[in-house]
Length: 243
Image (cartoon, rainbow, N blue to C red; front, side, top):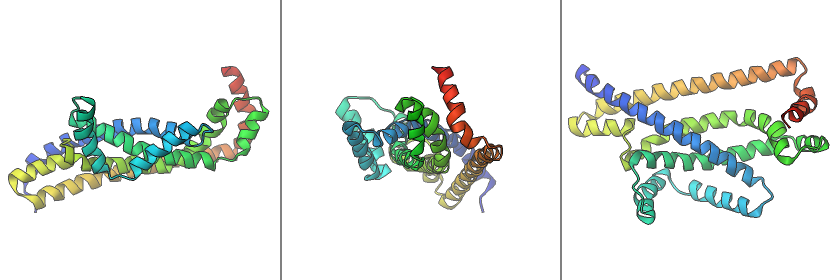
C-alpha cells in the first residue's frame, strides 16, 4: 500500500522528472529524425562515400548498447574534445544519435518500398531526382514509415530511463533519489511503473489516432479516384508552379 505521505512527496518529483523525460525524448528524437532521414537517403544514394559513412554510423550505434553510448558521450568525448558537457545535453545527444541510426533504417526501408515506377514517371516528366524524391517518393514513403516512426518515439521515451547512468534528472533518476533517502523501494518503484505505464499508454493511443487519420485520408483519396490520377498530373502542375 502506497501511503499518502509518499505520494505527496514522490508525485511532484516524478512530475518534474516527466518534464525532463519528455524534453530529452522530443528534442532528441527530433534531431534523430533529421539524422535518420539524411542517412536513410544516403544509404540509397549512388555516392559510395556517403553510403559508406552512413553504414559505419549505423553499424556503430546498432552494435553498442545505449548505456555505453551515454557513458562514452558524457565521460569520454568531453575529455577528448575539451568540452564542458552537462548531463541533459549529453542525454539529448545520446537519444538523437541512437534514434537516428534506427530511423535511418526505417527511412531506407520506406524508400525501397515505393514503386520504382514513380521514379520513371517523374523522369518522363523531366523532373530532377531531388524533385521526384520530394513530390513522388516522400509522401507514400512517409505514410508507410509512420507506424515504425511512432514505435521508435515510444522506444526513445522508455530509453531515457537508461540515462540515469549519467544522472539526467528524468523520472527514473528522481525515483531512485527518493528511494535512496526513504528506503521505501516498493512504493517508489510501483508509483514509477504506474507513471511510465500511463505515459506510454497515452503515446500509444496518440500514435494509433495519427495512423487512423492518415489511413482515412488515404482511403478518401482512393474513393474519390484521386490517388492514382494526381500522382502524375497534379503533382507535375504543382512542381511547375513551384518552379
